[in-house]
Image 1 (cartoon, rainbow, N blue to C red):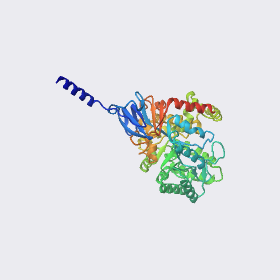
Image 2 (cartoon, helix red, strand yellow):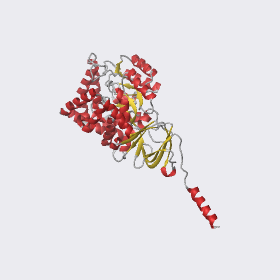
Image 3 (tube, one colour):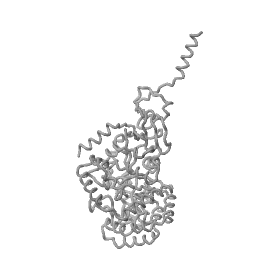
Image 4 (cartoon, rainbow, N blue to C red):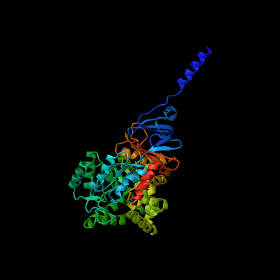
Length: 483
């Protein structure tokens, strides 16, 4: 009888022990803390990745793994969605473009939004992305800036490479959009020299074709009229200050007069003249009540903002002047590294103007107001403009967003879930959930405690492919050796 009871007890113990699970052809990250904008922070999770997607997420205690699995120990580490840089330019510096995909991936940026460049050139890098989805960031492209005449980025000097097309009529705008749509662009970018008629044609045709229209508010328009016409998002908050001044209507009429008088001037010269005439005055005449009305319209129309704060405050903050930042130049071509270091020395030696100081303060304050108004934002940098290293600069943008008043989780949202939502991909990307693509970052420290911990990357997972720290370092070393 005692032997029977002993046997029964042993059987009960065995039956109560959880069965370990074997997942064929899977990557298992065990005992990890996951963080995303939908689910917040979840401790002690096991994430199973199969066929490039997140197959299963479970508390580690509920899912014991067979030791035969391919297991990554996530103890003490943090898993976040792969990051987006929502404002880049592959065509701005063509000699740097062949390195950009690798640089972005090495810094944990797994998706990109190219906001302007020659269509044949940017299509080449999108094709590379599509052909190598497990080793190359996802790339969404706009093609050239849709500008009026005279156009700004006309190739007239190195600061204004030929990123735009100058379009002289409403019909020309529509024809160009038809062409770009046939070539597979993912969005459209409208620019500052468009007339109101051209701009409205662009937003109407974009909506018809399911293409978001982003850009700069045309100088011939104010922010409210551009938003009401269907602008889906604004880059750099460009020209927002002109519409938030107590004399905004007067400034608009003056801009239209300056545009009329400057038709024979190069586009870049004309735009600079208008900005130099008006921006400082607009900041000096900033009116909180006028700004509140503008932000209410942007919120109602869901006109998103990509503030690129690092770029826009760079003259006063000089983020690129640090030794740590310039260490990233080792991965750039020698010619670029030397030009950038010389340029930084020149900028750093210049006395900061009153306008630059005032604009930086205004922008930081406005970012906080935009967030408080419930207007969605995306993190973007404008790399490689103004010494902004591809990949490295996105982490700086997240830090500056937090300085401006966003929580670390909200800052992460601007570089993960929001870009996915912008492109209608929220069922595929942007958070750590089952059946979504496994674009992930494994971090050594908690970014909710310190947003700069997004830089402490232990591994990148791109569509299920784990690239560990050693492999990331080898990728950077290869870039450094190919100078």
